[in-house]
Image 1: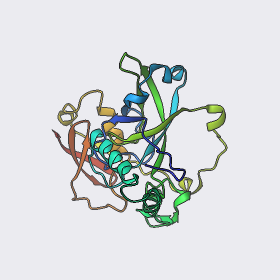
Image 2: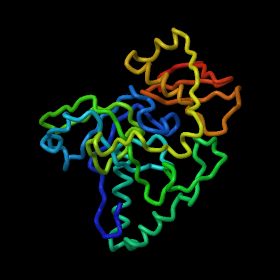
Image 3: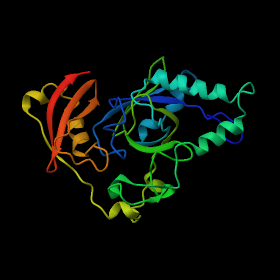
Image 4: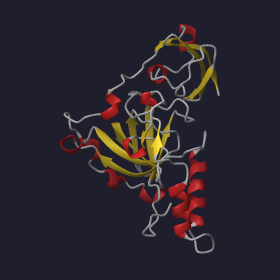
Length: 264
């Protein structure tokens, strides 16, 4: 990816999560507080000194790249996508400006329909956190579980990420309560409609098919209603890919009922 100054904006890391596809990813970070993730640095940036002091903080900010339309891509797939994008910016192909112009006009609109408002009300894209933006940059605050260092470089273990497995990150910054937390701040239209949480029913035998350290996260994902906005067919069977499992469920009268759990 290239910015208007002709400088490459390249990923410094990729995150490993249990979200294999976009379906099921919470709409904001922290909603599935126990969801585990591991930030792996690219070789150029895999330096233990680069994270020295990070374990003194409890949370961090991730600036990352929305991979719109790429279902179930691996980390290597996404690295290949970046390589292809950078090749397009060479003088032998289209000009850098043409690539930038295409990116600015691809898959975005001046207004979007926020899921929080039921998908029926439009708001300006810059008044929302929609992924369909002129520049596909995401911002997430995640909790630091612990920072691991080794001769191969650091790994940052985090909780509550809302990123698909393999998502590239442009930068990592510590969360500062003094500057980043404003208790009196207004949440705008997001405060008009309470979050619609589902109840979750899962038989004990199905629950046992899920590793014990993933059970709470699966329940929280379902509680946050991963269905597309406007879905209300009580007979529809949904399939959620999480932590190497396929979880089939139905939703009726505000309750998500798990029907089957199997390995992918």
